[in-house]
Amino acid sequence: MIRLFLVLALVSVPASAFAEEQDDLLARQLAAVVRDPRFLMPQRVEAAHSLSKLGPKATAALPELIAQVNRLKNRELEPLQEAVIEAIGSIGSPGRAALPALARASGRSIDIDMAIKQTTRDVLAAPDNQDLNLLVRQTQSADASVRLRAVKAISLLGRAGAYAKPALLGLLKDPDGDVRRATLSALRVVDPDGKASDDLVQALQLDLRDENAEVRLQAVRALGRLGVGAAKATAAIEALLADPDKDVRKAAVETMQRILVP
Image 1: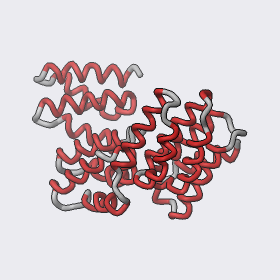
Image 2: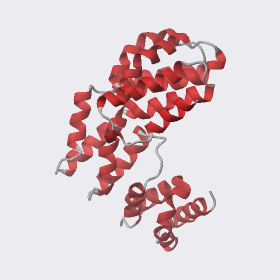
Image 3: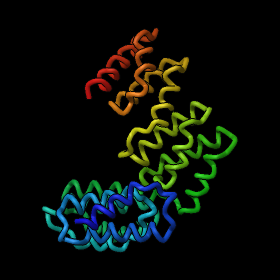
Image 4: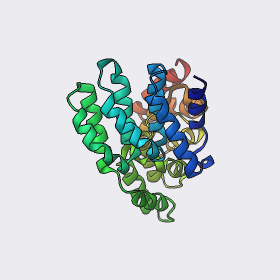
């Protein structure tokens, strides 16, 4: 039990704090929790979800994840099977080694088949690490159009693009509105479980003042989806209650309700 808490706590440490060897060690420790039947099922599932959050940094866990796909067949283990399959998909192109095991696992249930289908798509669409590194470098280009293309390309990778999350977070303050909005969309795709950050809320607040009503509308709706996480934008949202566009006004009211009544 103590080992699980220690391992899961490490996942919250910023990725920059880990050397490559430490990433591998963490991935193997999490995989050991996934494998060990002495842990409760929710704990094993949480360990698999933590591997998903590591993304490509969890590559060292891949052999054990493949072994689990072959081993976990009982209906009562289905939540763990799904979590393991999703973890493989988050690893990216190295996950292609799991395709034969995934093919053998098909037909167990509708949910398992759906997870296999998504993971297969993710690993086949994922670029080699060299390509992803190139996209990350392009997000730092002085040319806004290059940054925009790079962000959109990363977004197409799904969870396999999680490796680029630090670069995407840096673009939330980009001076180009199109780049910021594309970055917000990309973050929802590569890290759908990510929590609202101050930078994320600030990026959306910038769009609340855009001259385009559609941009303001999408921004205030996005803040609404964050719920109480968007509390720091309350004043900016309240200003939209007098917006000239009726759809924006209505969305502002709904967003305020979500923030104040979670």
